[in-house]
Image (cartoon, rainbow, N blue to C red):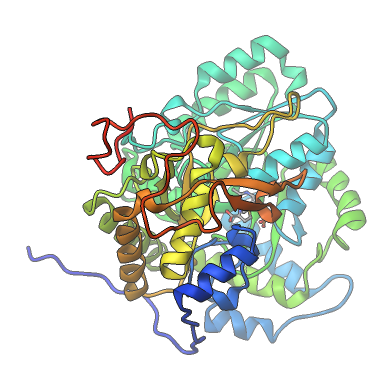
Length: 491
Ligand code: PM9
């Protein structure tokens, strides 16, 4: 049968002009931003793939819902609508709205973690780990080792290694583990899903030891899509049904509604336990707002309620992940090293393999994100050593196995032509990779340093030079000894 393409399941009703800049303007902008793409002004960006967080285009139904905002301080109708939708779609008993995901993480961490506790999870996430540490806990990575290998093709690289979890329980005792945090479609691993089979086994082990499970449900809908595509027995099950089954294997969740749920602001905490819910409501009034708005306007809660319903629609999720696949396949075809298999919310370029001439201490992913911006005006995000921060006990830089640059696709925002331009830009830059220069810190914040850190090139003043970059201090020889390989293959 002839291949039939799919198209976006929407048409465009309102447009927002994009700004085009010259290379000289971009060089000046990235230098002024301290070589950190978070510090660029959005007006200087052409295609913005920094994040899929809060960047979705809302539907006409969501905008109409905004007009139905009930801005009563207490008991807003929109809260009750949201509560009903969250209950139906995610299945949990209690809903505590928060201003965004980290608001929910803050409350959960402060309620459950005592100083000296250990919180296992399937790979760290920046804000999640920061709140666990601020509450006195230590994050312990129990993701399966295969997640740390960008080249390995495996359908469920988000799975938890039960051996690692068992070893932690044996070592520190279950009483020192307040809960297990299970992230859906693991962000820092490249948007890789966890399987239901694994989640069920993890649930059984945790139940045996009286350890609660909280999902980070931020991208749980995208995870459900991969379960349907890849896990035996789910081909005929709806995304909504799979999502409910995932949530039923946990005691609650934190969620940034700025991703799957298609809103520009919002988040929530869900718990099944009545006492924990009371405690959470007690904390939300201190840190976020009354328990029926949690730092949100009534209209935001309405948009979220409608967005959650749209997020599990089959056409939507197929097109959303289809667009990511489209971009990823173009890069794979051109030989660009990216995390395999293609994940749910973006393409993760393996910067260590893209820039083998830049040592990890010179932050190749940070340099690559800056160079891509200079080359094309496409804004991406570093997801490597800068994001990982420092070991809280030793103060040493953490160098995670994955040193990545994330091209994150906002939902329902860009077209296939934007994907083509992005792919062409990355492919062109790949040819010029030896011209990219490493970076060093000039300012390093204590918490979540990647957001506001500033850098400078290790040599000269530009991150993308016109000649191949000078050999950085400490770099190893290339395979041919004389640079005939273009410096691409270091030994
Ligand atoms: N994720 C992202 O771009 C936005 C901020 S961090 C650069 O990927 C997970 C898995 C997330 C997440 C945010 C949060 C926090 C929790 N869990 O940003 O506070 O990906 O709504 O959510 C970002 P909020």
